[in-house]
Amino acid sequence: MKHLFSLLALVGIGAAMGTQPALAMEGSETSRQQQQKMMNIAHRGASGHSPENTMAAFQKGFEMKADYIEMDVQMTKDGELVIIHDTTVDRTTDGTGNVGELTFEEMRQLDAGSWFHDNYAGEKVPSFVEVLDAFRGKTGILIEIKAPELYPGIEEKVAEALKERNMHQPNHQKIIIQSFNHESMKKSKELLPQVPHGVLAGRGWAKVTDEQLAEFASYADYFNPNMTIVTPELVDRVHKAGMMMFPYTSRTQEQADHLFQLNVDGIVTDFPEHVYYHPVHNH
Image 1 (cartoon, one colour):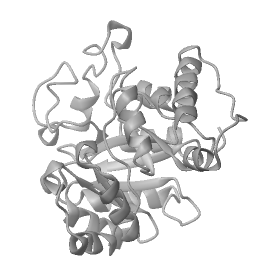
Image 2 (tube, one colour):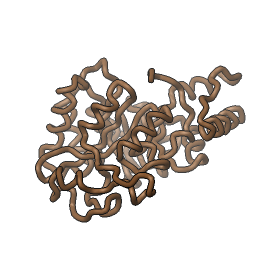
Image 3 (cartoon, helix red, strand yellow):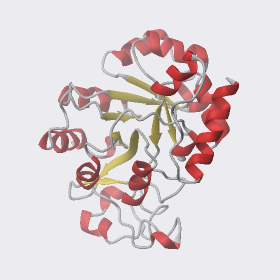
Image 4 (cartoon, rainbow, N blue to C red):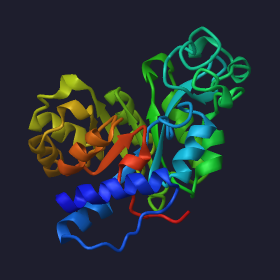
C-alpha cells in the first residue's frame, strides 16, 4: 500500500499543478487493478472548488476528469426539474423559500454563486436538461432524486428527459439514478429498467441485514452509504449481494485514502484530485 499512497500523493501534486499524472508506473498488480476500477465521483460537481450544483461546478468536475458528476434534482412549482441540494433556496442562493413553491423563472433570477465566492456572482440554478445537454457523452452523470416525496411525478419527468435524449439505453452506461427514498427508486427502475439505480443509505443503515441487501439488489445496482458506516465486512456483503458501492462524501485526502483501502467501487468527493483517476472514458 506504500506505493499506492505515494501514487495518491503524486496525483494530488499533479492535480494542483494542473498536470495529468503518469499512468505507467511500477506497482503491484493488486494496486493497479484497484486504481483501474475506482470511480471518481464529483459531488455536486467539484464542489470543493466551485459553488455546488452549478454549471461551473460540473464543468470543473469534467475538467478534473472525474468519472461522474453527481447532482441533486428537484421540481419547481410549475413542474420544471432544477438542480439544487436543499429543499429551500436559502443556503446556496440570495433568495428564500421552498424550491417547490417557486416557479422556474423565479429560480432562474437567483444568484447561486456569490455565497461561495464573488468570482461566481450571477451563477444560476441550472435546469436538469441543461446539465444533460451540456455533459451527456462527455462524462458520467449520477442523478440523485432529492426528496421525491415532495414532488409527485418527479420520477416520470426524469425518465422522460432521459428518454427524449436516448440516454436510457443499456449501451449508455454513464447514467445512474439514486435516492434516499427507496420506494422512489423502485418506481424509477420500473420506468427505466435498463438504467442502473442506487439506494442511498445514511448512518442508520450501519446494521443493514443480508435480507435487506437482497431486497435492495432486486431493483438497485448500487448501495451507496455514508462513508462513516463503511467497513470491509459491509463492502464484502454488498458485493456478495451483487451490488457496487460509492460511499459519500469524502472531503479530505485522508478520507479518500481510507475509502480506497476498503475496496469500494467509487468515491463521492468534493475534491476529485483526492481520488486516483483512471481514464475509463474519452474526453
